[in-house]
Image (cartoon, rainbow, N blue to C red; front, side):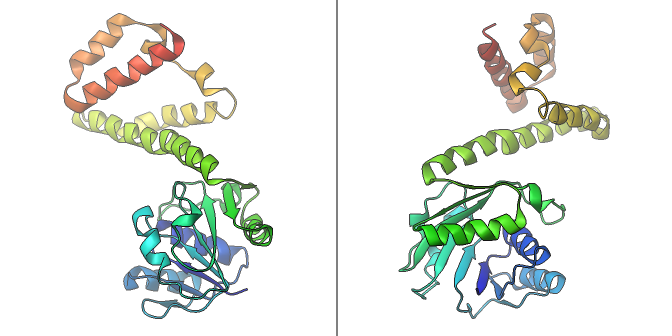
Length: 249
């Protein structure tokens, strides 16, 4: 099977690397950013191009959600399978006369951060059973956790991921702003962060909640609000209100 990855960003890089490490041949990685493609090609020994999209049996589109439809129009071959890697888009967003699918890896990707690909859940969807099995087989060579998922279910998977990853990371960034302003090394908070994350491997997140809001410690809550202003104050109020509502305080 001839496989081409389209894209040069974080997802394209990591997916290409996962393929190479698991001996899944890639015919080409294609995209617009020649500098990034050249880096990927040099590291993984994959042929790349910014001009000629090679004919393939399977194209995997790894670009931003807003670009998926336009990029999919570049594929003119009809007898092929095309899958995007979006968590939120339906496979029908793919705008071509070919078989459509999705191949969604549930992870946050940064090029400079190594990952254990075997632990990444993959959610696959296709128009027919043969294509579904093809994607399932490929994903299973990479990961121990592969599941079929409809678009309806995948939307909620992606929404949950935004809460569990993107929002949490934003709170880390806000926390670092506070520590930086007070010249407190953020490294001091890493053991606390690590323990918080590790704890939910063993305890339900709702049961693991600690802090002044769950205790309804109004004196501490008011003190903290006096120390904050602007958007950080609004976030603090919103988060504490949500915690109180969850525990009906």
